Length: 311
Image (tube, rainbow, N blue to C red; front, top):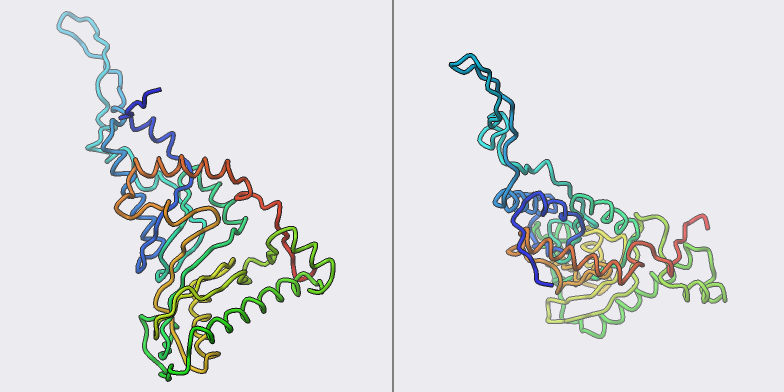
């Protein structure tokens, strides 16, 4: 069946419900991303064929003493009076994650009725994968590169093997912590059966948990690590880089944070800022709908166990 070009704004508006995978640039906040998306959607919708002005009934007295009833345009509903048909307040948006200003990469945004889907995705807490770059030899106040340097140290004694051993120890400690939160001995049969069910996630969504961490690249003084985690924040990732520097008997700060995967949302499928328009967003929503149908675990993790402190 041939595709049909739709130029009717109300018809397009009815399909503007879903979740879209965006690429958030570094240096901008999620609120700025939201405002840009809403502005672009309103601009593109108002460029389509919007509904005409309402009509009102006018009764006029003709010269031959006969009353004439006719319809005329209601000027109070004219675009020049009311403004564009689609206003920023008409569009609802909700993010599935709250990335910080310093973080770039994948971020999922629910639009209109898609905000309910975005809320379910957020509550399901899927794994997120980051590439975090650190700089050895300098420590800053906020643990990021845009703040004042507070300490300096030598890095000649640090090699990739030493970083790899430290990251393996961090991953092992977090894996141990998962079973401690569930109240199960890591050497027991119950721990094995629990691990077979899937990812063990803490019930408290304020508790960051690292499921995998490895050294992706090392170019002294820069090093890049890949982190698989949930419940993490930008500040937590910055503190992690700072602690890695201390454990290496030096100091370090974070120079870049990029999210390369959010659940089944991949980096190569995300929309760049130049593609944030109505047509591409509708296409991305259709792709997301197929993704949700293929992976129902995005909305409900049947293979994972939520464990609380009290359990």
